[in-house]
Image 1 (tube, rainbow, N blue to C red):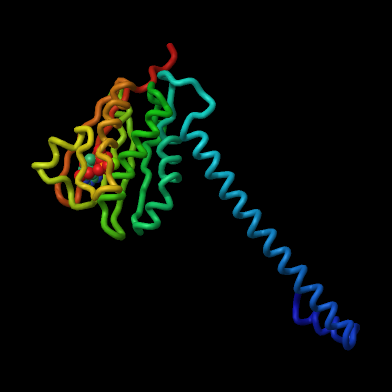
Image 2 (tube, rainbow, N blue to C red; image 1 turned 90 degrees about the vertical axis):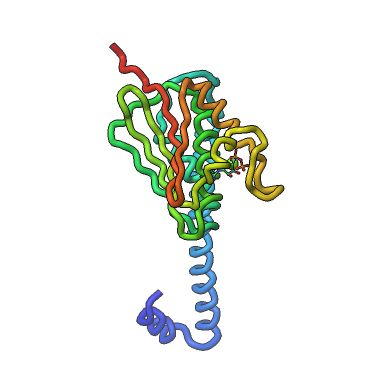
Amino acid sequence: VTIAALDALARAAPGPTLDAALRWIVAGCMTQALARDIEQAATRIHDLVAAVKRFTYMDSVAGPEPVDVTVGLRDTVRVLAAKARERAAGVTLDVAPGLPRAHAIGSELNQVWLNLLDNALDAVAASGRVTLSARLETDRVVVRVVDDGPGIPPDVLPRIFDPFFTTKPPGQGTGLGLEITRQLVRQSNGDIAVQSRPGHTEFRVSLPAERPAP
Ligand SMILES: Nc1ncnc2c1ncn2[C@@H]1O[C@H](COP(=O)(O)OP(=O)(O)O)[C@@H](O)[C@H]1O
Ligand SMILES: [Mg+2]
């Protein structure tokens, strides 16, 4: 709808006809804008449901299989995007090109990334940064979750994998995240290690890489 078109309309349709025509045009424009909004919202919902479905491996049997770690990390970032936004935290995903798949249990791995990213987001202050990275080291796929939060005090560090150990207020922490995480990593024949100092806390998960077909 342009000014020129409206001028032409005003000349062609005088008085009450013009009034009715304008109302009709406004209603048409609003309907179009609403339809566009609905389409965008539906696309977002579709993307999120697809991410959650992939995330939970709803369609597959549990057992070690070749797992594209990149997809799981990306879905995890998507699933926790709202929490990151709430904290005004930046989340970066950095995957080495040509990363081979890991031989692991996909659905369980996603719980691992979720727990680690969740903790990192709890730790960082506003406008803090969390980086998830993945690369091949010899024959292992190594994923790191690094945050620039205050770090884990040395007296707390030996206890973080204990069941029910939490430093968070009641209702916020269960203290089960890392205990479960460690079990899940072990079920995929992986290892988890942590190192922390103020401004740099790093959880490192190493998993067997898929052996290329002979
Ligand atoms: N990235 C992190 N930075 C600082 N502290 C952490 C981090 N990750 C874990 N922790 C510490 O480890 C504790 C246990 O974590 P977890 O098992 O996930 O339980 P919860 O998150 O419910 O407290 C947390 O309460 C916190 O003190
Ligand atoms: Mg936790």
